[in-house]
Image (cartoon, rainbow, N blue to C red; front, side, top):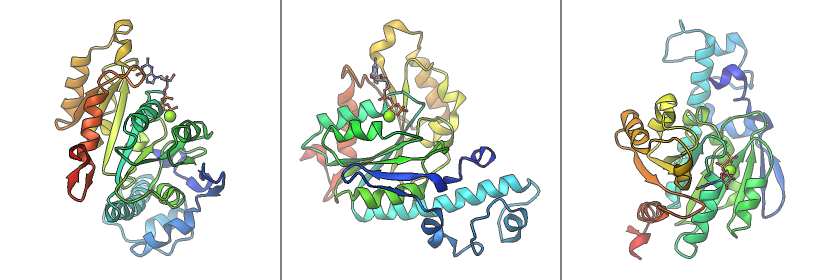
Length: 287
Ligand SMILES: Nc1nc2c(ncn2[C@@H]2O[C@H](COP(=O)(O)OP(=O)(O)OP(=O)(O)O)[C@@H](O)[C@H]2O)c(=O)[nH]1
Ligand SMILES: [Mg+2]
């Protein structure tokens, strides 16, 4: 996975606050300091063979160093993700991690959702892309708070990047933080950010077989949005089969069919969202 291609080296990741225009580096060493009480004294040289083998791991070593490094990276990520999760819970913030392949419509759905639920839900956004602040600028145009994370070579967001982004974003209590992950159906499935749920978006131009070809992502998600249903007359896409595939890897997944541009089906998504946000124990929908 990611350690093999080297994209988990997030030392080049940056965070840009669209409100101030300021860009800061995600300093890996700083962010990971607290996560190290259970492992070794950390000098950042994860690739060093002896170092990776020397400390106490619960798993077996016969799989080789690569697996050990992967598990170490994921374990560290999980610790920071849990801190993020606690941070969200303490502020009654619903955090959703939006994942999809590139271009499925994550930003479009966010723009529309922010616009349509304005006044009902306080939404702020963390954007993740390898390069550019384009998506953050699109979100900023809706009037909501947004921070862009650029991952450089990285193909997914990691929990420490989100922690750094949240410091810039400063979302209010009783609100929603939408995290738009890097467009990729593979790696983001492995990296918990501390979100309540992953929401996977699949557009009808991608083919109905994606849930079984990329099962980890669909298994890790609580919600699947089938987007661009306005294009159904023009593409070969069997919705029933897509749903069957999704349920075969994740029987409990919630499924919404919609068009983020034309607006069909958005109500069901909005109902789920407003019912999921609770303020003083009551869902926003009932307010
Ligand atoms: N026809 C149709 N086009 C859509 C719909 N939603 C998004 N698009 C188009 O799909 C393209 C990609 O949309 P984005 O919202 O930028 O997709 P994304 O998932 O944010 O893309 P990345 O951030 O690059 O991964 C744009 O041209 C959108 O206008 C939809 O419901 N129907
Ligand atoms: Mg986008």
